[in-house]
Length: 429
Image 1 (cartoon, helix red, strand yellow):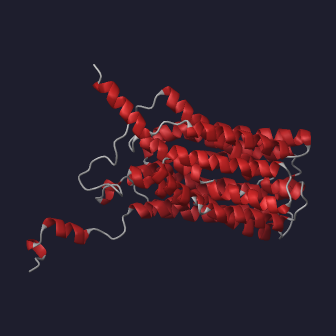
Image 2 (cartoon, helix red, strand yellow; image 1 turned 180 degrees about the vertical axis):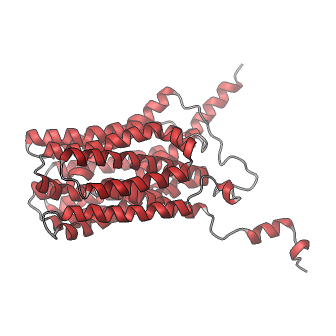
Image 3 (cartoon, helix red, strand yellow; image 1 turned 180 degrees about the horizontal axis):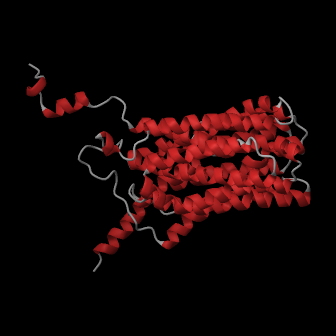
């Protein structure tokens, strides 16, 4: 005989009242939209817009690089303050407000007529991209246990891939309406980002306890999702992580900022043809986060990072050789299949080291170093291209630096090895 109601065992009542889908997965899909808007549309759509903007405003390569650089300057400033802003406002409020400002700033860019105003507005867009992205990545660590967060973060970061795919198909159509068509593209971006800011406000929650839940993957009564060395990252370890993320920032940004410009200006492709290649980057990148984020949960973060950086290096070196179309396709495949896995793995790795309570502050500091690389990348590549009349040297340097990142990743110490070392030190007389 089975008991119901007041006579049912308490555990049975808990099972019946537990929703089939943990609310953490609602945080994930809202986070995907957040990344789609803040990074995908707010930043990575620029690669498709730059050629038309450059022609309309008569910009040089160096000036085009400056537009991208000022976006990253804004991002850099934001991540420096993300920990304090998150503590004061909370993840939900900060993310929603940042997306709102991105929507307003991109609307203003669609009407701007001077380089200085565009760079100013785009730096504001960059600031709010950082203010939305960093707390969003940190929020996943609060909602998912250590052995689940790599996969969850992998799904969040594919928002950028959706944006690249959309930009590759839609921006050429809007730009084809005339020499000022790029303004319609910025206006469309504004409308979409404003709508997503409302969705994030409605869906996001700062912690599982607000829904009466534990982090996904954490057993009831388990307490912390996993043992960690909260707040115990040494200066050397922080510098090691920062160096890896810096190298990712300075290399990938050259590819996403100037690949379309290279195809159009140096290889003579039409904007529509280059857009089709760019759309393939977006489509393939949809698999990068879930596949390699999940792989990092199984075989370890350091091993997966080393694999990913090695594949990225091949991508950059292929472009540097000014390859036949078949090798261009191979380069795009290599880049797309791994690109968004690195932010997700780095965020998961910081969560493993620092714990969910401190991940926003530590990841913000790591991302600050990453942003320094993003600033140097477009400016340096633009200057080199101005001197050599080609981006080949920039891609060659990016390939070499990605190999260095792979070596540094392989040299990382696993979090469990650090715990064992600390335990031995604490137990020694």
